[in-house]
Amino acid sequence: MKLTVFQPETVCLDESVTKVVAQGPEGAFGLRPRHLDMAAALSPGILAYWTPDGAEHFLAVNGGILVKQGETVQVATHMAVPGELGAIQAAVRRFVTDMDDRERQTRAVVARLEADFIRRFVEFGKNA
Image (cartoon, rainbow, N blue to C red; front, side, top):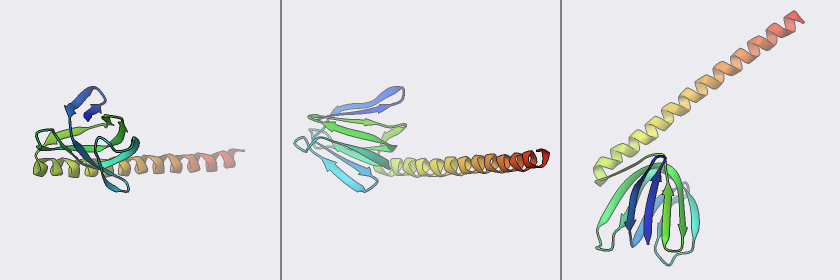
């Protein structure tokens, strides 16, 4: 199979592989060349793949989409970090922490917008 990992501005990985294991919202799943074609959402986690020489490699991804079609597996993700398992586990923790921080900031902005809307609505009712 051919595994290609795309980031917004670059191709992170383009290799021949014999097996891919990824993490989705429902759990981990594996792909081999004769498996059915599929598309799946990826959760932040570690994508493992094996090259034809039998070597296992790892890539931390912060979510994305995986599409297997025939002999090709394509992954689109915002960020991917290749490396040794221990080092990229720290990258996965950073992905999750960053995502939590962004969600917290987004909720704070929405709360301010809601409060401002309510304040203006109340003022509008007084002036009408």
